[in-house]
Amino acid sequence: MRDGLSYLESGFEKINGELADLERKVHLVIGLVFRRHKYTVDDLMDSDQMNRIQSFAGKIKDDVKRWEAAGKLPHRLKMLYNENAESVQERLRMINHAIQERKPAIWEKVGGFFRRLYRAIVELLPVICQRLIFGYKYKSVREAA
Image (cartoon, rainbow, N blue to C red; front, side):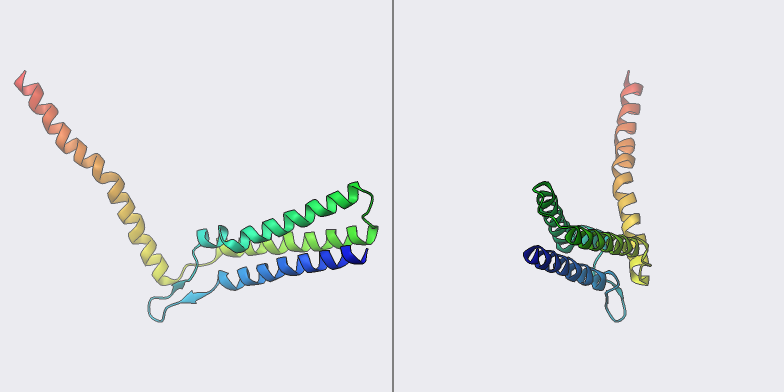
């Protein structure tokens, strides 16, 4: 019981440390004039912290299931696990919501506009060029016949 208790406490301590680090990164802004978030939404969602959190939580869950199947999980440890697991899930939900709903800095808005404009031009330019090139060739071939 004592080993299981210390295992759960240290495991959830690691997870909470990773969550705290991830929370700090959500609103971290860099730059004096051209301020922007240091980490993009994709950087945060696919971060090493997120992977470690999932890995730690999965390992703890598997161990608790194994203990329960073997009949070596006291009610107190099960309650401790359930409380901590719910707390971690709620905290992770709040962090995900904060990541998705954070307001972009002014420079990110401007940069996002230019990225979308660039992407539209790059996607449309080949179509326009093909129509110009092949449209004229097609027209020329028809007139020749």
